[in-house]
Image (cartoon, rainbow, N blue to C red):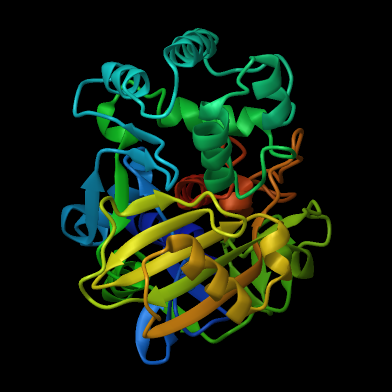
Length: 405
């Protein structure tokens, strides 16, 4: 069975690997020169860094499984830490190494900077949400959901809203509460303690999955066509023609903003930006915990990449977009308050980093009109916002459907 996979992001790579494992002859098309899509390694002044800082969770089971399949050992490539939310204003919530749900309960009850009454109210609310299976009666904004639950204190501003912005890349005022509840279900609400862990790449993102997957595919007989943009798809009852070349099936795994060029009926989505500001301090500079929440006007999160390199992340539309690269970097240095000038800095902006996770969002189906043309991508996994795990799961689902077509 000949199958074309269009797009070598995490969804396309996941589909290609499972297709090859299922016995298909796979041709992988990618317009860029390297694999990874919107989560890839790039060259910045001779440094191998990422086109945006990404954070993984222990709940990313399918991603971790795929890494193992392509000989990318998660235990070597990822640093696993119990989750902490640490803000620069003194707030701190740290999950202990206890079985779930006791780790979350104790972490909440021992959080710093929150009064006891708010902790108890939040624990009762979370318990009620869990009893309902994290299903909402109707989708609404995260802000409206928190308002209705009486979540208006410190935990709203230092936990729920920052986590929403980090996970959905959409501010709580316009983010889908149901999608956020799904994220909580599979992380803080999971019965597996390991699902709440923070996984930080020890290596450039390309080495975590995209490049090992590309090597695995080449070693197992797949044809890789990098630098080749697909211009036309012609699906039929017995297969799909890709720029005139006949295949038994095709998996379309491109970013959602590129879908309409090949699939005119694809749903139109709105998008949110992400900026990653790399700041190189002296090698001895390090954060007490490698993930820190910033509470100033410009910063949101900062990740310690080691050896004095910090990656500051700004998500979703906001005032930070009005700043120049130099102005944004200067503002973040001021908020970090680490003293002294940085040795090197670069700003990477993605204007359409993810789709905007609005309430009631319409998502494309996996099957694009007929059973031999399948869709994959973070935009296609309706249970999640735009995450690496959603991309991998959608790719693997598309592969299964293609093999069964």
